[in-house]
Figure 1 (tube, rainbow, N blue to C red):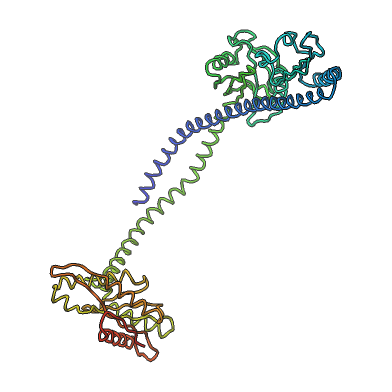
Figure 2 (figure 1 turned 90 degrees about the horizontal axis):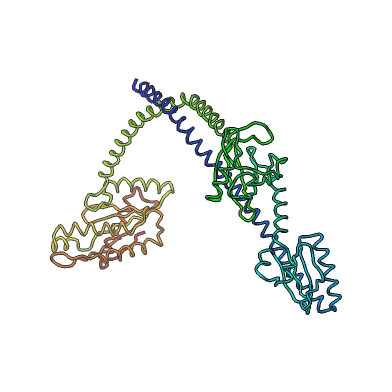
Length: 500
């Protein structure tokens, strides 16, 4: 009943919340789509402006290089020919270039001012004055002023010629561009930034090609009575760019819809480069998304309830399982407490007897051959008698801690009784056991601390043995290790002996 009641309550809030989320989602989605469309328009228009600038700069670079090459060629011709031959070559060369390209050139005598060659578009003023003057620099994108003896030449490509080529290419490019969602780029050229009648010319318009070249007026309105051209011009005058909306027909149809538009001024041409995208697509997208969302919600409601029931059930089962695990953990903790020596933290003798019996059974099956190391502290009774039992307990703890730090993680340390300890090392080969034990002794020998009656120093003596095939149980190896320890004691203490 608790599960059913919980499902009913949660299901009710689920339905109510879903409706609220749909409302919020619609508004948020509308804003996200709107921002996306704005970014799309801005980036596309900026890319088109960058393309104009890149094409313009490309032509300038190309003709600047050509002008330099032409100068080098004319210098070589002048050096290898007389004046008349040079004039003939210059005239023939630039007549061909000016007829078939955007070049402008002139050649005249400096002393008399006699014109030897003059192409269309080269004013008399330019010859009467220095061709390198600022006025020439402003008119020409790439040019050269050069004296060849008594002759003066001026040639190059004007900005107007380059701009004509750029505008023609950009117009072809925009007309052939294909954008998604019935979008396209158009260009209006501003004649009068004050507005009014004939303030601009429609230069490029893929949706109204037949109107290209017509004059525009800021008094023109859309179907809703808005003044889009006036709003566009005011935004351009203020910020050089703007977003605005108005109603316009769709591409290649007579259907009229609200359009979000971004326009930006390309100042060198007085071009307003613009792009628009219809907004009504957003509502259909949001409606479709909401319907799909509602369908998914209805379809997933039973799954949601089933998951809720499963979660509650799993929670109850988990509580039971966790309780059992806690009991098991507590049992293991109590078992660990029963197997550990409370003073040193090493395993106790009870645990050692169990492990040695198990290891001997494994040895008989050929699975293990552990080294058994028995050691105790030298003169431990003296420490107790001289410094007291508290110091003796500390000595036991210090030695146990030192040994546990030194031995491997697979090795085990047991406190057998009093100051006697046992180490069981699985996988430690006989040829390595004495160096291992001697190193351990040296580690222990380094232990030292001060007590009230003086400094305490500790050493150990150890005996080592392995299981033998003749052993009836682990006791055989244990006794051999014990005998080896006694030999170490008798040999002067602080040493280790291996018994076979």
